[in-house]
Amino acid sequence: MSSRVLAEQGDDGEVKYSLWTLIKFIASFNKNEWPFMMLGLLFNIIAGAGQPVQGIFFAKAITSLSQPLYLGAKIRHDVDFWASMYLMLGFVQLIAMYTQGISLAICSERLVHRARDLAFRHFLRQDIAFFDKDENSTGALTSFLSTESTHLSALSGATLGVILSCTSTIVVAVCVSLAIGWKLALVCMCALPVILGTGYLRFKILAKFTATAQTAYKKSAGYACEHTNAIRTVVSLMIEDEIYKEYRAQLDAQLKQSLKSNLRNSTFYAASQSMMFLAIALGFWYGGNLISKGEYTLFQFFLVYSEIIFGTQSAGTVFSFAGDMSKARNAANELRKLFDRQPTIDPWSTDGKKVDDIEGHVEFRDVHFRYPTRPDVPVLRGLNITIKPGQYVALVGSSGCGKSTTIALMERFYDPLAGGVFVDGNEISSLQLNEYRSHIALVSQEPTLYQGTIKENILLGLGGTNKSDDLVSDERIIQACKDANIYDFIISLP
Image (tube, rainbow, N blue to C red):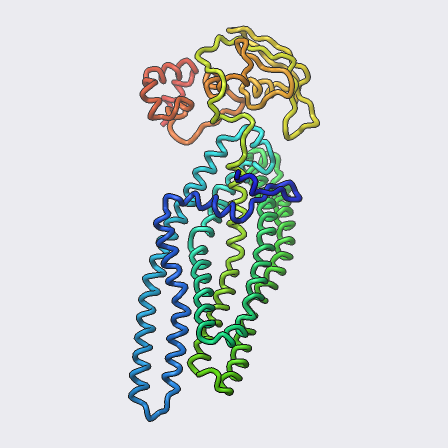
């Protein structure tokens, strides 16, 4: 079955994947760390079983202390023994918690590393239309790499460890209490469904809120990033106050939604936590009746009572991480959508006709085009132009008439809606994309210099500095600088 079958379309048109699909997707990032995962899972179970085991020790210690005073020597011996059992349990818990913490931390860090690495790689794969959308602004994509990928650690790191540990505590505690005293266990367990139900509702509300907040903060982050990059323009126009007010207005709008959501979340969290005291009250009341009738011994009462109390506390603890889990789910959903998105113009594709050499005969035949983000605004309407090899052509016109669009279509940043762009008689959409682009040199209106040396910037596009060093000698680089009339300027730099 295709993974796409396990996704559904939301009311807002957003693709939503099932929780199980997302868990398997994130688990695939840690498939190389499965020994660490298994080790962490094993010691998580051991750590989780520590609470129910100490419940047995607690019941035994109370029973020992309740013996008649004339058995002072036996009381001393029994108390010393169960105290040593507590000490032994402490050492076991120390080893278990340390081992599972290290194991899951390794998995978590490698998961985040791979998520960021592959997310950035998929960003580079997307077509230009992807980056034209408001939700894919520089600020939004940077925020995704720095923040959203970190949230994935809740599905693999310390949060996952606590969830697994609490789950094993609940299972062991319920099994032990039912085996020792099923009557009292069933009465005390009546609070568990309420705790789990309110916790699940809180998780659902937080997941929905997190998705909404993520969209809102992406927008504000993109707004801040855009104006920070253009800070010279902002300062020269003296619009700092207007920019600040708009950014603050976006944050204030999100703040109102956050307060409403936090009110509902706090209500459910308070309900789930207060239910533990319901279990305590019922345990004392019904357990006292059973002891007074002689059905249960003091040991049975304290054992079942302590097991269920520890179990309910663990149940409440699980959903205290609802916020982290909801953030992780939304981050996983966004990452999966990115991985599943197939760009219309795919630079990874090796399909198409090989391009060995290009003479340079360019022709636009009845080209019609509209930008995907502005489908109602026609930019090119039946453009016909022929450019011969070696010919110089200037495109002149008012702003918005399609000059830059014509160059973008030649680079195949976009495909025309109708008509075609031909080079040497071949429509460029039939050519192998990267090979075709390797024959084009484009100097944009605002050239970009990347971090690194001048040499590294000059050699960009030749497969990396190390590979370029083998292909291009320093003499050729110097000659290229002289031909571009920038050699003297470079030499004058410190």
